[in-house]
Image (cartoon, rainbow, N blue to C red; front, side):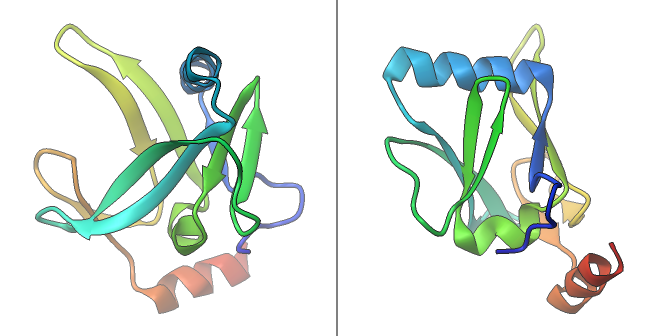
Length: 126
């Protein structure tokens, strides 16, 4: 929907691709769907869920055995995002490096995006 031919909507780090592929194999799932919902102190939160079949309107990204589906309403906001998987002494999880984020809460769980007009202008200049 908001893709540029020849350029994936999101990029996966090698660590994220390995983790997603592991999760797909372990559960027998077709992939991982990424979306957005209202919530958190900054206004929006990422969602991730296992899926057994892609929705025809999903943007699908396949990389190194991993498959990510981007929900239609999230595509514009996630375009250009790098997804990583980090492990530290206290926690492990997916990290989103999203150029469309204008602000984030202190805990990093919720985000605020640039205005729609600004995002659309950036896409047309790419």
